[in-house]
Length: 227
Image (cartoon, rainbow, N blue to C red; front, side, top):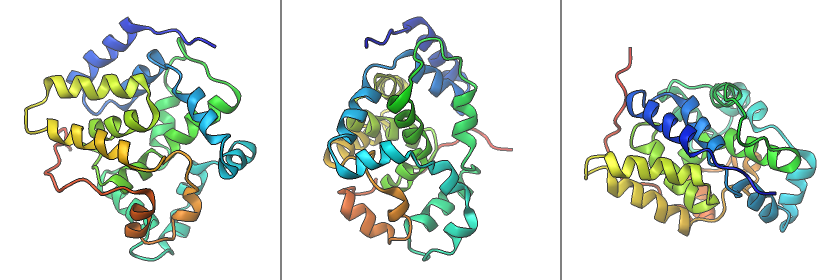
């Protein structure tokens, strides 16, 4: 099935993002306007592995799993789960933040169904785990850098457009982080096809080794002014 592109809608969302860099809904507007075949290809990749086929059959909700902070807090201090909780607290986020932003988007261009719909939701719901594994903050550098990582992993045109927008307009010192994110995505194992629930109790360092992710070099995060 061919997915339409709405370039004008994507450009309008990017214009809003230039002035409201923390407007998460606009990221989903761009993803909806420039869908490509990323979800369809992701489904194809998942069907090639035993775990991927089980994931598509059982369709567990990662949001439900990550919402259980008490369970995550009981896991070891060096675990992926502990790293996730630290990230969410430092970024002032909760497990439902991306769901709320996604559900507010008008599905005018791309209305996935079946396995494609589930894969899109799974990518969305594990997004912050990708932040933790890569080491990118949820800031004005880390978010587009992670989009570059995701572009390399998933080939999503929306992720590519966001990364290129920031690359074109950012100060030169920011651009190396975007390149680093893209190269990390090329080298890493496919994060989409991972059994994240089983990885949560494991040491974060071990998870990174398993996924072939060398976390980003230290950088000073840039945030929109916070109250």
